[in-house]
Length: 432
Image 1 (cartoon, rainbow, N blue to C red):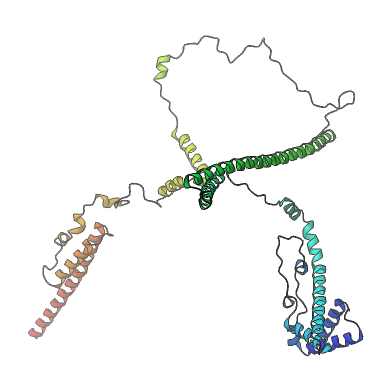
Image 2 (tube, one colour):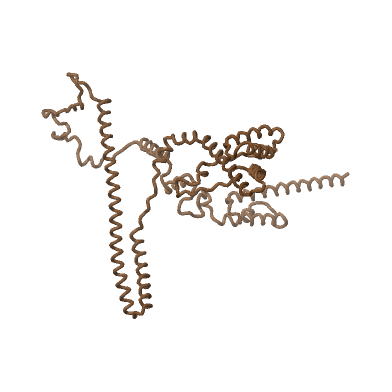
């Protein structure tokens, strides 16, 4: 519906007025029709977009910075397909038989709509852009940005390229001289002489170039030094005036200001005795030879106190490097101490021989178990399994065997009691 409204409105406008109507009036009328038709055709109006906000630099056909490549905007980037179709239909309706006028009218309408979008974007972003540029941090960042200066090639690279080029140049001149009719020896002499003269000229030219670059660097350093020297005068003057204004000194008896407080110097009285010089004789209370045999004795409490304080102070900052970290982990038990072996942290097992882990059958000899039968076969399998277990201590293995012995002993006792009861019942029945 909006498409037809736009078509009829542009047709009436172009018949009554010229095509030079401003783009702002077109967009105002378009927004008015859009709001009036939004109640009936919400789906169509939601898909229609008058334009998109784009950067103002994109609309500039001639960018200010030639090094920056701008993307040329297409009509589809500014408005949607429905609006483009409406503009095309309006141009065809106005100029049915003239294709050139249709194209011109279409371009004129698109250009005016695009220009209006550009002005709308500039109006919307002008305050934000000025606020961003007024920020001191962004202004400082932009002021510090400097153009990259071309870095000169290193001397080693220049020598390497020069040697390679001279070899190729000598070969080329030799080949050309040989093609011109000279003999091999003459061509070789010509090539060497020509390359030598060319090398001499190139070296002189290079020296001039290096000297010119050095002069430019010296001039730049000199200008920077002069600028800093000029600025330093202002800094010195400001410091001098601020010192006078803020800290001018105390007033003297006459009401004037002292530029600098006088220092009070205390002179040493030469008549006083120097207590740091031992001019008197010793009393001789202690024998010097006996003093050498004395032992220094102190309480371990204070030594341990100082060690604990130093340890807490050092641990509060953490390990300084990887070695201290590994030492700390070793003391906490997180790492094995060196040398690493299979007997680390064995405890009481370090005193137990391997035979006590393997030969467990002799432990069963002290118990009253059957020597044959299923119980004896089962206990033999238990001993074999425990002897192959490397994760249990010998004491734990013996406890397992004792548990099985008690288990079978209780079973045997219960079975014997059951048989005894059966015999008593059988005897009572026989007597009756």
